[in-house]
Length: 205
Image (cartoon, rainbow, N blue to C red; front, side):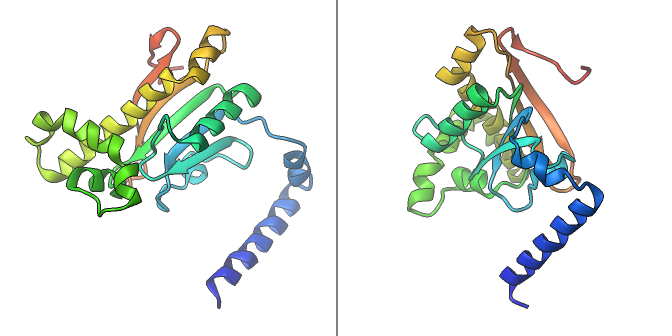
């Protein structure tokens, strides 16, 4: 069977199953969205955000790119952020990296010439800033640590954007989370949460 046809048939089966379970499901979605979360993650096919968070359609507003970057020159991510905060009024923005990220490893080892080199410059800069400590680690641990440092750096960049600064000034409280997803065991590790009041520990709330 043609792989694209397989996807279309799977979609038809899924839609029929959802209607049989909840006849109003699609009607509710068609009336609008009110997600509580903006999810920013890597484009990697092994990081299916709705499956690993057990969320349904309408619960996550999503932006994905190579190595889950928040770049000041990326209009796409900034537009997604603005819409999520100002129109949808999400309460949480999550940057979720993942161990085994090919983009992060390429930034560490040197990607092939081309657009990817330019795109990954922020990750390469993080590596250079922390190189003295990272190079003391075995390669796999160095890679994993850079994945963590990258997720934290992207959350710090989010906090510096005018969208987040203005939201916090208005009294909105979008919490900013740096997470990392582990491919070998399917678990998410929280690294940092920022709010207008500074770093927060939300695990118990």
